Image (cartoon, rainbow, N blue to C red; front, side, top):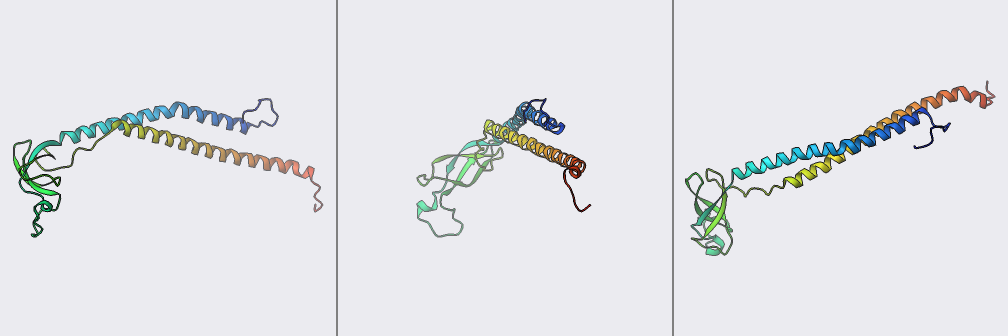
Length: 189
């Protein structure tokens, strides 16, 4: 690929190929990090906003256990009994309303114990806010963008080489049509 320019075997298509490869390499070195930085910044902002929304809608409140989990009470009969690992509890929502329902509890907890649960502003139970890590998400997006940029530029390189090879094959065929009859002694003609 990198040969002296005064080489008689250095065709115009070879110069185009070398220029294309150099241009794609420079584009990757300059454009790849910029693209990754831009995409990672957007992913970081998005993940941070999502985490803030999630945390704004989640509140920890104390809940007082009203019943004992069935596995501990020995009460296996009854179809309306809570499932093992849950117990009835009551709590006050951030908006001041009182609520009651089943919550997950540890086997060692008893009626009257206080457990911290996550609720919405209106007092409905919810999962704890997910542990968002915006930096990890941004890093993953940056790596994916670099890989996608490399794949796109490699695809462009392959398309360019296919087109150059077609051009070279046509040129070779044309030259052979001119030179071939002089080299061969075709006895059929």
